[in-house]
Amino acid sequence: MSEYRPPATMLVDPRFETLATQFFHLFRSTRDGGGALAVYLYGKPVLDVWAGWASPTRKWASDTMTLSFSTGKGVASTVLHRLAQRGLLDYDTPVATYWPEFEAAGKGSITVRELLSHRAGLHRIRGLVPGRLALLDHERVAAALAAAPPDPRRTRMPGYHAVTYGTLVAELAEKVSGKSFTELVRTEIAEPLRLPAFWFQVPESEKQRIAKVFPHINPFGIPWGLTSAAMGLVPRIKNIADAGMPEGFDMLVRDPSIHDYVMPGWNGVFSARALARMYAAFANGGVVDGIRFLEPDTVAQVGEVQTGARDYVLGLRMNWRLGYHAALVATRTQYSGAFGHYGVGGSGAFADPDSGLSVAFVTNRLGNAFTPFADLRLPNLGAKAESLAHHL
Image 1 (tube, rainbow, N blue to C red):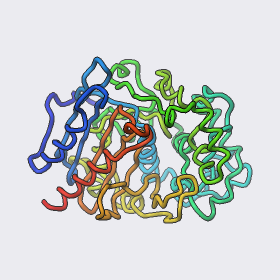
Image 2 (image 1 turned 180 degrees about the vertical axis):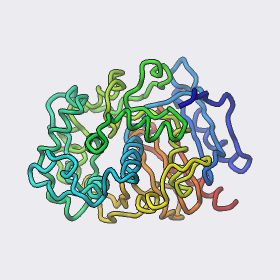
Image 3 (image 1 turned 180 degrees about the horizontal axis):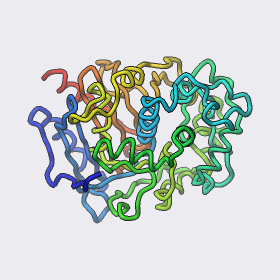
């Protein structure tokens, strides 16, 4: 890849000026943190803006990136789709064909398609490996998942693999390609898109660009372990604790050492510019800025809803695609063809093939004053972007 230089000035297409204004109003003081918003229309950039603070003493800059949590699941899935379109794997082939150890405990029939749509029954991370630092060991977590029995509900409904998904996809990608996952992200995503801001294992030279994430993710300020244990006793929300609240996770996400490891389910570091560019290919028949990134057949398959059943972890109908969920847009108008992946705290990105639109928003300010988990910033920005695109 030739040397990349981030733009020195912001891009605001006059048709999307009101969207830029809405974005800028989100960041008025240091307590609002900072963020970036990028939009592509029919494979071309129309908005690339940033604002606020990367830390209490550092303004958000053109090249700032931030931890985006589950947003990375969409990037990891895209790696696998790039391998599939070259014939290295087939969606309807059992995972164990490529990863023999995965056959253990009755998982021999689980297909790649089922894994990508959260129907492998391997949502549980709490207690899977002992100690919070064990989550940093990809090989150990992958081996534990390969040996684990699947949840029997998998045959009736999906169950969001909040932390485990990234490990499963990364291990499968490595098995079919013979390459490390970090190399695959570089060769299958960053280099073809000519944009290096896709990281799961961040090089030392790039770490100074990462924004400081805040506040703590402890719900309502209650100790993480206590919350996880209490939720684990309540039948209707037990699955959320099992899937997304492993021991010490609140401390782990604030530990700078997480950027030295590959955990694609939650530790991806991206810029909005990079995410919008990737999703622009999904919104424009596989082509972005004249680059053929995905084949039309791949785009068509990826956009198909795999299951409309209620997710037994989230309690919602997520309309899972092959690694992506329905776009959450804060409007009565339903953009049924839009899909992407959002993350804890508010970052995320999506593509809408019907409007040719891709939208990406990243922020270091997790949630709002009531909860650090999520808010309506991206859904509101997405709604405005869709409205503008549909009225051009």
